[in-house]
Amino acid sequence: MNTILKIKNQISKNPIILYMKGSPQFPSCGFSAKAVQILLNLQVKFYHIDILENDDIRKELPKFSNWPTFPQLWVNGELIGGSDIMFELFKNGKLKKIINNSIKKNTF
Image (cartoon, rainbow, N blue to C red; front, side, top):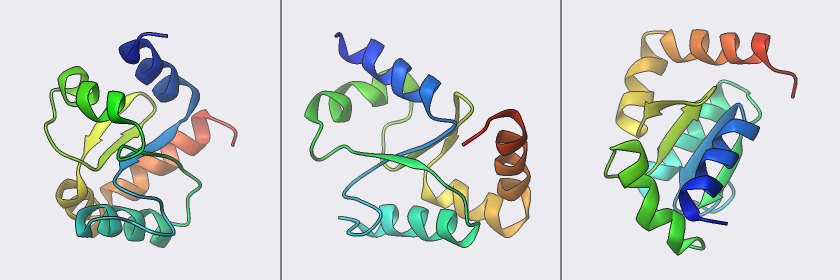
């Protein structure tokens, strides 16, 4: 499967997906750790892809998303952003609303 199709498939099948360095249990960078902490704080179930173990995704996702860095949070097929944007949205309560709308639209 072509990498872009693989990415589109992952995003469409997972209402909340975090492309990150490492895993939620063992993040490999501070930004990924921050993103995971935010999602854990919101107590939401999310799927993750370790881009360090998926070189094709690491190379192609920034082109597809037009977002050059990781982590990348996607909710209902829409790019939310990286850890700094996640933190700002978390702080002002908007990320919780985005996540809650996602949960209403999907069953986990």
